[in-house]
Each structure stands twice: as structure tokens, then as C-alpha cells.
Amino acid sequence: MSEPTIEPTTEPTDTEVPDTGGKDWEADAKMWKALARKHENGFKTVSKDLETLRASQMTEAEKAIAEAKLAGRSEALAEVGPRLAKSALATAAAKAGVSLPDERFINYSPLMANGEPDADAITAFVKSLPKSNAPEFTQDVFNGGGASGAGSKVKQLTRADLANMTHEQINAARDSGQLNTLLGIV
Image (cartoon, rainbow, N blue to C red; front, side):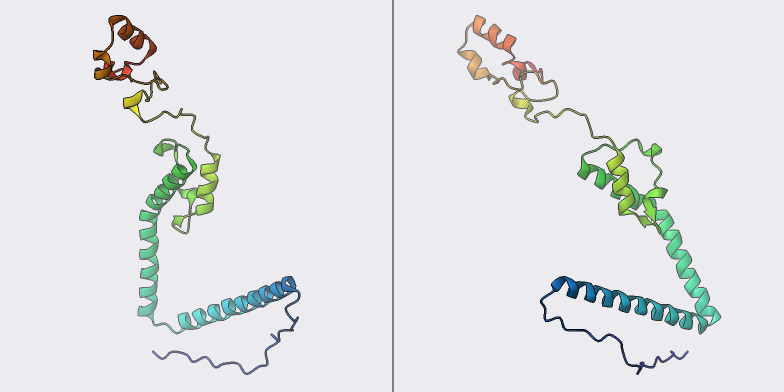
């Protein structure tokens, strides 16, 4: 099959760029944006025309191959897409510091666009989740921290400290929470 040849146009272009001398940079920026949009739209039109031309010149076998590729891609994305959305959602929730509801209550289809995770939809969903109200605890459980909070601000005593203390001092230390680590109360 021979490829169609596209002849370059010899028409004059109307993209003459006026020179503003670089004094009005905002006007220059707007002008270049407008030119870029114009050329982008022209490229899209020509690309569509080229695809139409290629499609019209395909043989039946080539059309069948193209349809099979499209069907395979769609099937693969339908299978893998929800997993991608799930991981993207988990990542976004972890970054935002929120907890996700149980997985059976999450519908992943609105979080996808064209078989792939939709970042805007995921961000909107994560923002709609309530912030976690879990209290923050120190992780230094050997020095009085931990979930119980008992003695989290109190210096913990060691066995060596106990060797030099009287019974009254040990009882006072236990009452004040200085022995919580040794007693296993954390």
C-alpha cells in the first residue's frame, strides 16, 4: 500500500509578526499565545484529515487489526483501570492525611476517565473526606510515650535507679507514673 503524499502549501501565510520592540511584554505574550492556538487548531484539523485519509485507504485486514488493537486496549484498561484508580486514591488520601472508607463502599468508575485514573476527580473525592480525628501519640514507648498517654511527660526510671531508692520513694515513683515502662503500663 502506498502512502499518500501531502504537498506543502505555497499559499502566503498571514502570520506576519509585528515587532513591538519588546517594550510591551504582556501584549507580546498574548500575541504569541494567539498564534500558538491558531497553529495548534490548524494542526489538529490537518491531523484529523490525515487520519481520515489513512482510514479510507486501509484494507479490510488492516481495519480488522486496528479494531482488534482498540478492543484489546479497552479490555486491558477495563481490567487494570480500577486497580490504578485504587492506588492513586490511596496515595492521594495518604498525602492529604485522611482515611478512606471501607473499599466496598467506594465506586471507582467516577474516578476514571478513558480507562485511566482521573486526577481531578480523585482530588475532589479526597478533599470531600473528613480529616482524621485520631489523636497523635509519641512513638517513644520506652520513655513513657504511647497510646495510653500515661506518663508521656514523666521521666521513666530504670532498674538501676530503683536499686538506690527506698520503698517510699519507689511507691511515690509508681504513683507518679515513673515506673510505667518497667511495669508494662504503656
